[in-house]
Amino acid sequence: MSQGRARLGVLVSGSGSNLQALLDACAREDFPAEVACVVSNVPSAFALERARKAGVRAEVVDHKAFGAKADFEGALREVLRDARVEWVCLAGFMRLLSADFLAHFPGRVLNIHPSLLPSFPGLHAPKQALERGVKVAGCTVHYVDAGTDSGPIIAQAAVPVLPDDDEKALAARILVEEHQLYPLAVRLAVTGKVSQDGARTRVDAQATTGTLALRSPGMPR
Ligand code: GRF
Image (cartoon, rainbow, N blue to C red):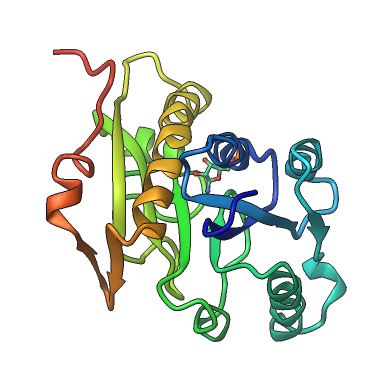
């Protein structure tokens, strides 16, 4: 790994397809970040396999092994500190992080969520979108605050909701966009083109005009 790249710690709980997108992006020479370690709170998460295959340090910090959340987060921080992680990327990580944890990485914790926030935070976002009958769905990368999917928005991508969609079909269409959007947002964040400014995202307009607009491939006219 060349010097000067931002060191990412990617937190996962499951399949890790977004982790894979980040690993693939980081494998490109011109990408300004590298994955320093992957931490899963679920020992059986396939994401760990992806990390190992990419030659990246993979650790389990099982929340079930800790009585108090603070202890779980302390163990998490220990691994991140040991791996000299500068930025934390949540990629299908199914635990809420406390304000205390976040304070150790101010403005440096990102998450990806499969809805156009602020609509449909929380679990089963594509299902929520279908139940609500929206015609446009999508995904969001945002800074993490102590709420659920409530931090300042960095980037969004949109997909159409089609008449025959079930949850699986819509989630799969959104996931394709997630894999494009997360590396884009990480690039913007670690290069300072966007930054967290309290409850808002500050954008370097000169550098990112257009980049943060909705991407809507396949949108029927
Ligand atoms: C993605 O839909 C992501 O937006 C959400 O959880 C899912 C994780 O999928 N937070 P994967 O583990 O990255 O495949």
